[in-house]
Image (tube, rainbow, N blue to C red; front, side):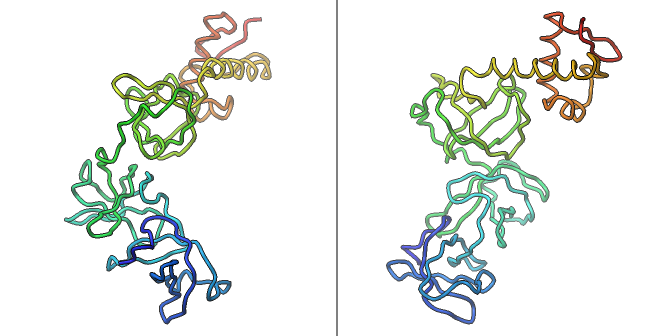
Length: 282
């Protein structure tokens, strides 16, 4: 087994020798791994050092690729199910060989075409990578390390009636509540966010804006609706029921934030709303 070549991550290895199957790459301790011919380029020369991702081939041997998966070992990614067998499923994680998801790590029975957030894991006994849809055992609970307003990286995991469940820094579970969202977000999206609160029950609230900017985001939405109205002679054929695509095209806002802005403008008597649309009160 390749003890000094790390599975599931990018390794910097030296091109040692050519073969009929491709280049053999070696680590500092002279452990080797094959880079198949499909990934060999004319620019590669013996003794060059190159960065490669290491994963398992169809016979579970270590193999190198110059491609990068959508997520590496210990990371979360949004993958589509592309194959189902009695013993598990396969998901497209961005490499030529799909990632296997064992049945015991499926939260629900997976079917071809489904898309979920999965964690890339390793079976320490067999040195094989696998995907986990049921990943509770891999989530950290030492949330006390998180600080209010700390910048973090998140992946949007799941939509709920309260908001969106997210994974923080590939370690923690957290929630973004609907009233904290002032932009379009979607399942599988990766972005930067901020820790809003770490609760006594170890639940974590996340904000997409630095703490203190929520009010500014609300004011921006109100200002945008009013500005677009004034540019259109104070009238627009828009109501609470307008289609999200039209709202986004006119105001650059989600329907939810547009409706909040309308409510605010109505409360302040800046606009009048009727069946035909909205109008600035002159």
